[in-house]
Length: 248
Ligand SMILES: [Zn+2]
Ligand SMILES: [Zn+2]
Image (cartoon, rainbow, N blue to C red):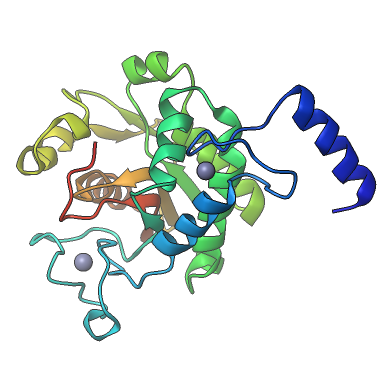
């Protein structure tokens, strides 16, 4: 950080104190996006080994291409998934603030960590496009914007891969997080549709979403894309819930 930049930031912080988007503590001049405490916590929740099919934390001895004991006992339609961390502090608060408290500026830090996670995968260079999971019009009015779409655009710019909102959602009765795990697959069954102009035949795609709990949304989106002719489908989410904990 240059001295001039440091001086400007110090003066700016005096007039408009910057707050950590996860815990609301005042940020110091050295802090970029998160305070030091949240930054250390972020390192902690993003460093664990996880299952490449469902994102659940596993030891290295359980890591194999067939998944882990927590994998859903049904056919997984995507080839692999990547996630930046567990759905825990401070990632959880950042996602909630981004989606529900209109902190659209968090698209940059969240987009950066998701882009880095995708970049670390062997399949990153094969990707033709990123496909954000769509939301209903009702949800779009409530959020006042399309958080996952904005996130996908941000990731796409960083990776030079187009983010294409090619999916629509129709007939979804309830939001997934309002339902028990057993009812989530049926709630999203056949609700995603490809837009009329969409051509995904033979393409390698990566689904983008914010949080995965049971992975039923990712599976259903992947099924829709494969039905439309997609060659390979991967998935990338900001966070995966820990199956041993309640989430909201
Ligand atoms: Zn903080
Ligand atoms: Zn698994």
